[in-house]
Length: 281
Ligand code: NAD
Image 1 (tube, protein in one colour):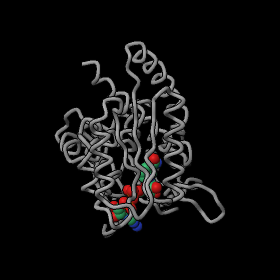
Image 2 (cartoon, helix red, strand yellow; image 1 turned 180 degrees about the vertical axis):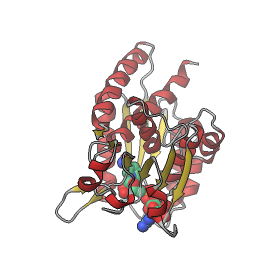
Image 3 (cartoon, protein in one colour; image 1 turned 135 degrees about the vertical axis):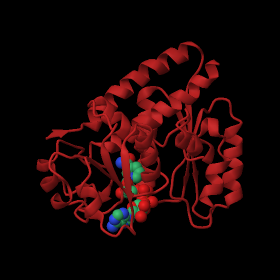
Image 4 (cartoon, protein in one colour; image 1 turned 45 degrees about the horizontal axis):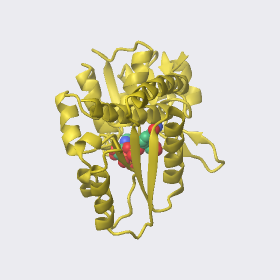
């Protein structure tokens, strides 16, 4: 069993981004990321702080627009339109979830696709489905990069994706399909989850339920990727996989923390750099 070390790879990627940012600066371009943070959800604040810090260490300019939870939808849309027109900002990220009075889809669709570094705009979703170059959501993109680093080619593999959200499962499905894997996608209404996971060469889970994937649900030698992040009552951070019992059965497995999480942030930086490079054209 080998651990897929997302922390080490993300550090490597960040070092490369730092170098590239330096070169862009010599050409007068400072990559810029704007984050919209609504309300006071502690997890969202933590994620945004981590993203700010990652920008700082790689030389990317970042600005956070903090807004109260009772903000109107129009005010958010107005802010996005303003940033859309700001030539110094290359990437726009709206930290989710948004409060219930806000139409999340409307907000995401207001971001111009060229600055949609989270890859949630329907234009970029369409590009991903068609296998065209665009912005790909950071978490599934991070999984693909981690597999690539360890020379794990999904081509021809039977992969079971557990979780089918717009930000994790669905883009994961499309990336795997574009890489010629045979993909099964499961969700809350899947009748027999173990039936699907047990026959997979690779199980990728992003649900948000500790110990959802147990040792009996995974075949011997499988690759297991855990996207889930769960905070237990004792303060520990765990994924969706019963790591202790599943790991010995696998060929490769990601830990939580230190697996997919750091890759997500690295891909956000990479997408921002990609957006900034447009200014060269
Ligand atoms: P979500 O709630 O939007 O979606 C959860 C998905 O899991 C849904 O498709 C649902 O149908 C499915 N599901 C729920 N219970 C299930 C069950 N018992 N069996 C099978 N499927 C089930 O959540 P999300 O935003 O996609 O996030 C999922 C998890 O991934 C969370 O733990 C989140 O914290 C984590 N996450 C991690 C990163 C990262 O950087 N590592 C990034 C984003 C999300």
